[in-house]
Length: 380
Image 1 (cartoon, rainbow, N blue to C red):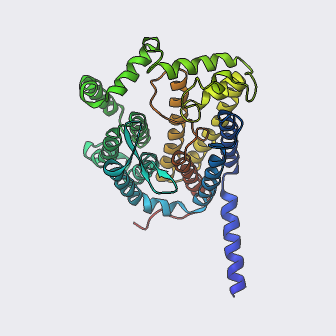
Image 2 (cartoon, one colour):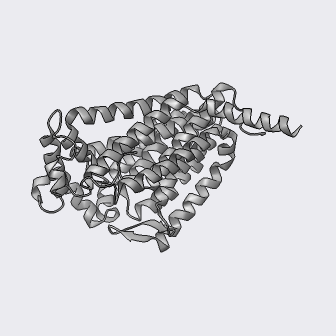
Image 3 (spheres, rainbow, N blue to C red):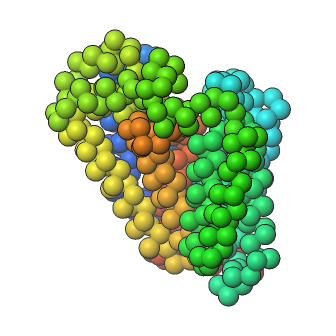
């Protein structure tokens, strides 16, 4: 009997492994490999201080992603509100006892590593909004009072993140929530109403809601040449690196802007400059193609899911990934202000990689509902 149970457990594990989206897994590994190469180059051909650490983090994140994918969606459905509540508590902990960095309290020092609660909230917000709208009938979504709870679920963490201050993450939280609201059936005129209110409040936001350095970033974005050695230095040097790479690049470890340290933060926010200078336009397009594959698999997961919860989770994770990539690319190209958003799976960083890959695991998990891997999400 015990042998039979062990055989059944082994068969169950193998069945779950078979449901893992290995195409998405391979695409994620390819993107991470690009990051390892670029971090190695940014460090002058050394594994330290970034590449070896990043490889270790990715190994842990890969295990987390696969294990998450093997867990039935009903588990994440029941855990959604708890994860959101824990993420809010972590944001409060960062507010009152966080580690200072760049003028903002964004990290919690846990000894071996630093946790960035705002990154955790990006995934928790997707989960909690997906669960809420899963329980709301379509005709009720059009009522204003039905939208009050999810708006509070967004407003509380958004306000805490904005206070850090972290404008880039705040924008991502609001945008991802907006797409989930839209996919859940919220009418267009309500988005127009909110947009009009935000536009009307712009003078107040500028006067009282933005820090001095944030205002300077916005003004420099409009005219980088106004402060080429100050706030405009990042964008100016990144553009030079992008242009100097040409079509095919200068070759691995041969980037002059990079290895002469003209590009600040080249291992995090501006790692695209390393790619473009050493591998040119062709290298950048290859990374975009890998990103396209990842986004394709995430959207396919949303289409395969048979529940509203599953569809919203997979779509929310996909849109979060898209925003990461779009904002960073536009920022380095000078199309958006510098807001400190990393290039997903490529930039050096721990929390952002772990949470994003946990999100990929969630997308794979909810897609299993389309393959008969789960029953009803809840008993109610």
